[in-house]
Image (tube, rainbow, N blue to C red; front, side, top):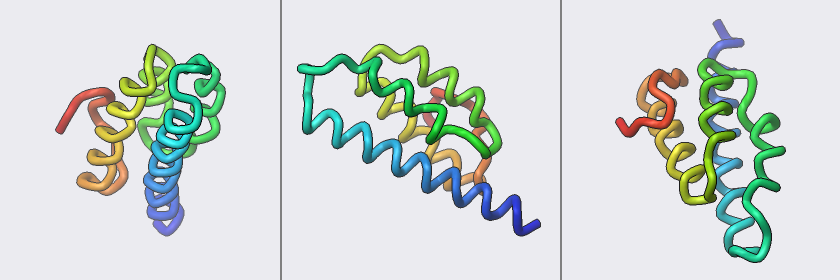
Length: 93
């Protein structure tokens, strides 16, 4: 029981950290560095919670930071409103 709650809280924290990473990268580098460099971090941030594999796949298919931020924001909304479960990756609530 406690493991599942910790896992869900960890998923929210990881998504929030990834979102901050994306924002910092964009403000520091803008378009001067290619976005695909960030994709290597998706596995680190997006793991160990329900729906992580599907979310990671969706993020790997993105072409821009804006697309990735939108997906992460939607996933965060879903996790916070459903107790840590991501049911519809890439879709708005």
